[in-house]
Image 1 (spheres, one colour):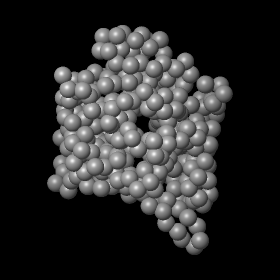
Image 2 (cartoon, rainbow, N blue to C red):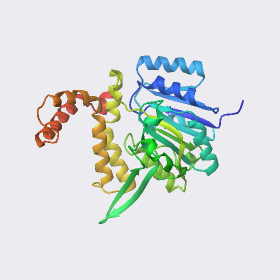
Image 3 (cartoon, one colour):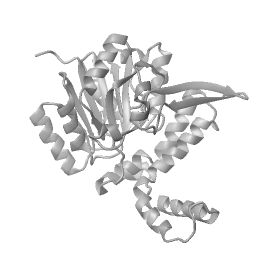
Image 4 (cartoon, rainbow, N blue to C red):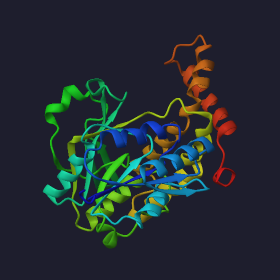
Length: 330
């Protein structure tokens, strides 16, 4: 039997309820030898038992923490135990498709890239022809305007239906990938260091890609490797505490402020303001059913100023009711 060339590291992203479907998909659709390390960051008892059983049955390394972990903390816990040429970090709520791992390893072998990202899709597992693109590589560049430094990012072909742009997708160098799934040469971490744990949520992929590029490394996009980001709504009740911590105002502000200081961008840069607003909206996803129920009772049209003001009022109330700080949840 061939010695594995790659270790797959599964880490928590924002929930636990997709654990089984995601893990089963990895074993079903991976056609080359691989090691697997699973980092379990304080999952609830049913998930904890399932992972322990699967670790015994399939022989993978299980690292359990009795506290919630940020994604970068989880990656670092596993990284010290990786002894293969490549390591793939994948979130615990991602579905893979046939050949996904082989294709990104081939890309790294043939291009000598330090980092490779697949084609990220949104949508329903198993129906690729109906998928929308989440990201197909992207841009990540510093810009300066009126003496202020900003970071410009764009995720290529985001929200485009896959069939409409598939002919435009090709293997190529890129500036940005996402942590839903990413391959890296294990040796690069001796040069760039481990993942920065001061970044607990926002901007983790930007920080990693900038660090790799500053060290002279290359990042490639491989469209023949495809993974699916499965949207987190609806959440199970046992997902809520971690989800709300993962996107808490404490973690968001701490991460974005640290990133802003680390890379010297302006406090009022578009990267900071837009990113912070996105994280706040994402944090309210579990509350959307309640919010929509209340708003649907109103006779006002959606675009009316009164409607929008009331929507903001409801969001504020629900945030105060449901959001808890780091010390309460960790």
